[in-house]
Amino acid sequence: MTDRPLTLMAVHAHPDDEATGTGGVLARYAAEGIRTVLVTCTDGACGDGPGGVKPGEAGHDPAAVAAMRRQELEASCEVLKVSHLEMLDYGDSGMMGWAANDAPGSFWTTPVDEAAARLADLVRKYRPDVVVTYDENGFYGHPDHIQANRITSRALELAGTAPKVYWTTAPRSMMARFGEVMRELGGEWEEPGSEESEMPEIGLPDEEITTWVDTTGFGGQKFDALAAHASQGENIFFLKMGKEKFTQLMGVETFLRVHDTTGAELPENDLFAGLR
Ligand SMILES: [Zn+2]
Image (cartoon, rainbow, N blue to C red; front, top):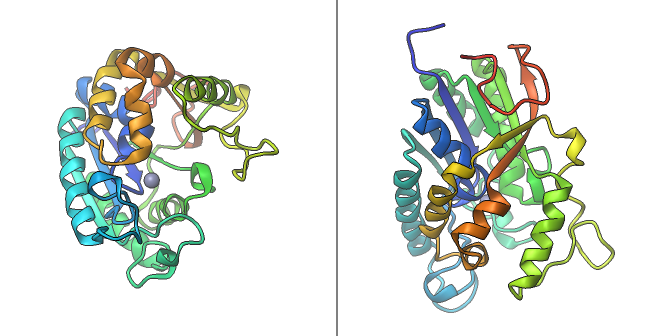
């Protein structure tokens, strides 16, 4: 045991990813007195502008979008009681194949070692016990999410690893339920990995998931954090579910443990199992 507080560091690509992917664990562990550090790698400038205007359309001003999303991120952090927000402020690279991928300053074109060195400084500063980021495919193939995985792995090599490292994931059973709810709400949903979908299969078979954290008691906070990012079209779908359905569907957050020095038995229900 050390004299510094137990610390969770979540490395995310865009403003709003902290809420969808890890809003439950950020809120829950903050409530348990654990220090929470959120690192957001990009400015989110390829997101929707006011009124839902898309990048490249008339009236989409990337700098204004970035400023708006920064405010939304700060509001979300307040809801989730994030102890420290660190922004790396790289340019949002947009979806795979967009011209923004190669724009100067984009996260995707930033050499891994360069961004990883900055993240390594934060790892040295906060000495997290648990680090969470995406898997090697960035969960669904977004370049900035892939890059977040790469710089996190490299930063932990440079600064020394945390005792426990996780990638966010979703159980396939949950993806199926998610599809049903999307269709109920009138959304378009093509099962990832199915014939009609361009998206490869995402998530993991339930039995491969190592870590299931119950955050249903924090579903309201997770919902409110996402509501802070209501300017983004894809979040409006979640918000349409209402708090109760949202918590039912999104109340358990799941992870793949990729590094561990504690020997905590798997499957586990706590990112800090073996650390306290
Ligand atoms: Zn994202």
